[in-house]
Amino acid sequence: MGDGSAVGGAGPRISQGIEVYGGEDGAVSWSGVELTTDVMAELGAGPWAERVGDLAATRDFMTELRGLATTEMETETLKALLASEPEPLPWQVGEALAEVLLEHWHGALWLWDGARDRRTRKASLPGADLVGLCVADGSARLLFGEVKSSSEQASPPGVMTGSDGMIDQLKRLSAKDDHLTLMKWLRFRCLTPEHRAAYRTAAGRWVQSKGQDVQLFGCLVRDTAPDQKDLSNRAKDLAKTVVEPMHALLTAWYLPVAMTSWPQHVGVLDFG
Image (cartoon, rainbow, N blue to C red; front, top):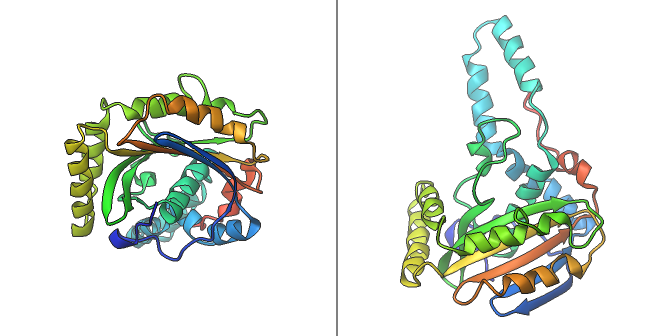
């Protein structure tokens, strides 16, 4: 699907995982990818941790706070508060992984780190999990999507089914009901001329297609053995709703690291 290097880029490329199954039905495709230990080492040492903690912005924030402490007591109080910050939850780490892999492997361009929008430490923000642009072949499209993480042994796991499952959520995203709200959110986060230009291209395609020219992503992050039943039947169901010029990709990433240990694996820096 190309890459986003023409509009912001993704930095050094992350090695590809091993595709263990895949398929296509009309405008919907699906793919199961096993992440090797080498790929996990690349991710945990850099971009995954950066995305989980929004590290560059967090460093600036913490440095500023320390500069405001003028007494030893203030410094000690601040140090204790920083040390009390909880580690990210596994689902937050799974979301960050999806963003990194979509950026490096599928041309996703993120104009904003969602970690900056949290109002509470364990917040799950309303709306689509993924809001950005998909850059490929010299053009850009609106990107909306959902991310689910699961250790459940059943295939497909429960997070894929039901009214709160990924497929129903993607069906709702395929409708135009929330597009304007998501586009407005995205537009106000275009902070550079190249991002604004890419957004205008994507919004233009949306207008000209009467709200249909959108790229949807459904990302399942697992610590179980690969099983095509995680996606294949769900993808065929989604294909009844998603039709050209809209496209959807369902992807499952299988990690060789237990979900409970994902926060430790990324090694987010300690700012205490």
